[in-house]
Image 1: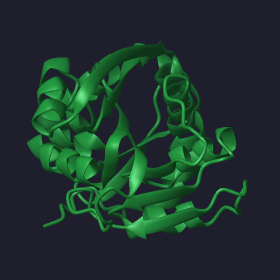
Image 2: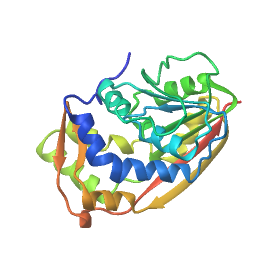
Image 3: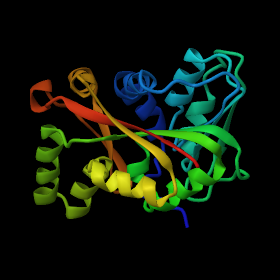
Length: 246
């Protein structure tokens, strides 16, 4: 059964696109493609695509892909993803679906991408096994997760735990639950992948984002907007991972 804790309602998807994508999600996507190259004729799945920034950056950089598919559990995010006019001739399609039960036949894609989505999935092992199912033999999975908790989030989570609720603090830190490389390696190995490669990418993306934009994050069923100073934040590293399906 799909988990609905991270469903965004009302205008939250539009706020996410306006306030977070351009200063955080797009730079992270560009950083990922500094490590991941797509090839002509690839059929590519953007898993947990959100408002579609990874797909947009992919078709900007690689205009000879066979097909680009974005899948997300949240229909509001997909509505935002569908809004921009096509920017290349690469066929792009959006589909609502659960990464733990992907609505695609076996061996549908040469590449699966997942930017900062795996940590929000209740059963990441089930998701990885589904991703392996839809990959062709020797297909590639590339995903990113944050590898550190920034000082800002640590302080914020502590304040939420003391003044709001434990659930709010847990939600605040949910995007950092897969920061341990040992846990990640075991997950992808247990899912049946081979050729596992880990890499770290360090950048001031998060610092710059906090300096220029509000941070939107889910607490329960609402999204709250907080203003803050860049002095509260330390630079954060992200880990990029490439694995292949046997």
